[in-house]
Length: 409
Image (cartoon, rainbow, N blue to C red; front, side):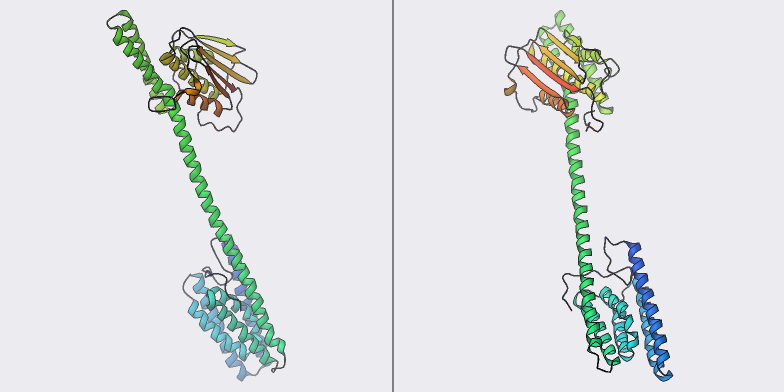
């Protein structure tokens, strides 16, 4: 008999082929039933054949052994179905079966069911020994039936046992491989799901950080500048104006914060037409900002509207805090397939290539604007130089694909 390639799993659902995590219970149950019925039919047929060809005195001993084999098989089938230990009973069955098949070779056909029971009940070397003993007993019985003259009767059962063992081992090996691959696929799927959750968490954190930067942070920074200006001019008339403007900004900022907590939306800006909403968003920070509209105004997807509003808010806040500009203008263009937005100021300007990286002190504005526009498949650019003013430009598709990943919506 060939040596085992790997440890085998004992069948727990009943005698038959090996079961594992990937086995189909319905199909396995049908195999078990076929093995049981086959054994019963062959045992009865062999008993009838033997009784018809031998005297009553000979029949009693052999039929008694056949009855014992039948009872042991039934006990094993019940124990296996109940998932209770049955290996010891199998050893007894193999012993009784060996005596029966040597004494009455007519029962040799039942060896197939006994062989599968042996391979199912035992693992490793014990399974090979039990199956080999079944094949050897069958060979001895058949060779005895031929009065020791037919060598094929001796070698045939052994050869069949070897072939069945090889086939059985191959089936077990393929089943083990399938279970291993199934386990690996499950692990990979779990890791992929965890990776997607981590990526989703990172994307959500990026989105919330942009929302906070474009609303809460910018509003608070502008209010702080106004309050500092009011403090310097106190108690003059300009200080009262700066104080009122700072108060108004803080009220708006509080409203933005509450909206961000509940639904991350822009209160007061979603209902107005897009040009009016953009102009209102800009004048929150730069009261003298002007708006020019080109093309025929039309409705745009909510994601495009939201992105343009945030770009205007962030750019206007930067103009108020850093540019010291006398003129600020917005140009909103409606093209056939896209919407363009240019924000110009004649302020101090800066070198975009030398912009400070994001930190606790700021620096998130340009990066957040670029991310928003590019996530919608748009183009974002900044043109500026020291003392020459700044132009922030964005072009966003007017129609978004049906399955766009809209984390920023």
